Image (cartoon, rainbow, N blue to C red; front, side):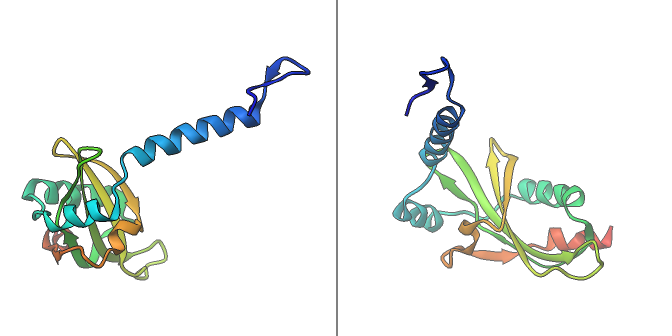
Length: 146
């Protein structure tokens, strides 16, 4: 892979893009867990602290189209990714879409860093893991009472 086009002396855009993509993927994979590490993290998972649950419920007000329509909400236990040092958990819930109908239960993976919500990923494959432990999430469903 040549970064420069020898004929023109200019940067080869395709090679540069491939290099940037490779570096980005390598960085993401550095935080990945093996299947055994993931299972160990799930086995050691703890219930989500009340402060994080409240932060998620507050963030849902801005994220959801109709946060007052949430039903069937569940929250997983919180796991630690030992490679990245970040905690993560999943939330499942059903709420209304822009058309006013229920969209079906969506799963969202939420990453926590230093006790604060850091990032999220809708329909994350991690949330489909059958080993995750779930519990009801009444704080999220309570938005309809506000």
